[in-house]
Length: 293
Length: 285
Picture 1 (cartoon, chains in turn orange, purple):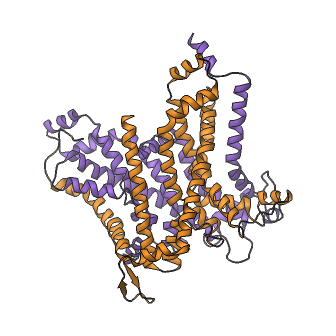
Picture 2 (spheres, one colour):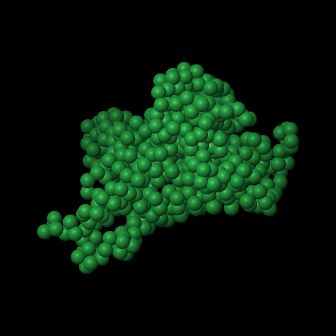
Picture 3 (cartoon, chains in turn orange, cyan):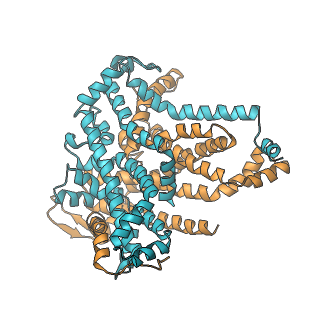
């Protein structure tokens, strides 16, 4: 789409666009280029020189069992976060949509957690499940269940999943609720006159009509659980125990900053870049479709 | 008639009550972690370390919050709050300003290389800061911007979501307005200030809400580049308040800090709910 009416001149637009170009070049393109470039080298232990290894870092990574495990961990983590945040949100949105009065009050209450930073969410959930002082772990202990996410990898995963999904419920709720409000009343009424009960209507009419929103949220939530959950994992488990919660982004951080292995960390960044690229393409393909829907 | 059909669809009586019960349960479950943090911020340390802790607020609210704000653990929480505020506002304002300008240039001018710039900006949509942390860190360190507000802000405004949003909006501004401005002999910048910016008010406000929360809630980036506790932001500073090793954490102060860390974004979201939802829907489109 183009404007029919435009202004003349080239130095003014160049001046206007300069700040953005400058910031993007210095803090985006240069570092991104560096990440790709460094991924082809192995620096010596003193950081004085580096040796060109081509795709050696990638070959090493893909054969590294810890890295492959991290891929698996990320997959499990993001699927669980997506499900745990979307299903409760859909349920709450369907309930709120049934109400004629009062849904605004519930909505105001439910959007709170969205404002809570992932790292703060991590602290809140850590506090509840803390092995020494946590209320929930204490009651679980009374019921005969010995909660210890510091030692038990499965429990650690469960905790970071719930803490990450918690704030996302608000986000998904808002989108589902808006989509539900947009479902034409006449369609629902027609089905009701034909005798379709609430759940029957939900499965056969409402849910299919929600599918664009659902698909959009699927992609957005996967992206969220890939990239924005670092704070949750860092505050609760620091990737442990035994790397059981080390997702890909966490590994870029721990190999690059804690382990100082720049070549490997850059190669990991490049692999992540490809993953983001694929997810973005999926998202755009879908957005295009939605326009024609 | 319409009323009758409405009544038929919206089940009344037991169904309605059940719906309210489900909603209230949902709100309670979702609120529980925040409630517990609030309670923990109003009781004494011994009450917490001997589980189970109380589920109703105590009388230490004033003491815990003043202790957190004025002395904290490594650095007073008031300092961290100020840093977060500067960072969040810096990111929101900075991104809005550079995006308004470049979107205006892209939409209202035809200059050589315009499409290249457009695609360059488009590319930055794809890479979150988490992916390029190591080289970005090196750039910021090279500029001597570690432990500075500039280092906290600039790398996070290098993305184009806002530019896209404004571009989409500018394209909907009727051509007649630009035509009239041109006939009247108004300069492009005058058109920008008198017509485009005022028309974008709602979009700017909605974007501000989203970007403020985005900036406030940053964790990884401040963690990397603020080694000086004086520059810590509140969201990343909380983790630093936990002792290393086996010492017991000062839970009431940590929980008071958590509550303080969520108050500003919660106020922004709840008080500007309509703008927030609009911003959310716009920026994800």
